[in-house]
Length: 274
Image (cartoon, rainbow, N blue to C red):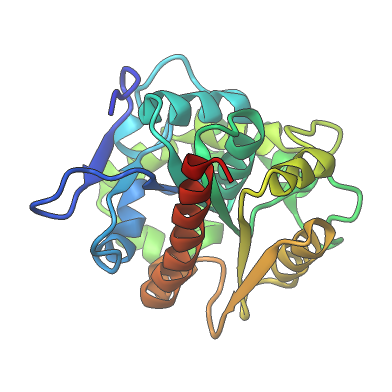
């Protein structure tokens, strides 16, 4: 693994084995970090799992230059893989990174899993999604205040108030990454198309969509519609919301295993030339 300068990454390798291919990569969403996958990683024993803080977040806060597009995050992931094949799993915006990587680097991705990826540039994206409203607020708010506002929306005022002051300041400092994420997937700015995703499936690469039964309506509808449009597998996690990787780590890990097994089978078929 070769991490781009300033990018924090860890490969969790089961003891006593050589890291296999494909590696399972977990990509976090907006205003999140790799640590949120800790319980999922523990439940993925037997798999080599790569986690990292995306550019501008967590321990990659100071990575430069700032990411301004989905393509920038795809480039970081590709650099981390350094030619290794991978099963790429993404949560929320990380799902967009996973899907975008499968489109632009098909030789590296043996399977892709996207849990409730926001796709507001697609014409059928459900009404009621507030992605545009979020951009309006962030554009009109001092950066640190905007990041705090967004984080409070995610976790609630009580959890924000319980954070140590240093942690609050680091979260506020993630404002440029937050704004880059939100701007990069607005209507009229498509990082990839449905036809490009259909081509991924057409090559035989498995694509799995995940969603929580208790997520907001637009997350559920968006995931279900994307799976239907692509003819991709769709897995529901009962009683889970958008943060299923943290709140329902066991079921989320089982979904990851399903995607990983599909990726291993695809990798075997590819190696055999069939």
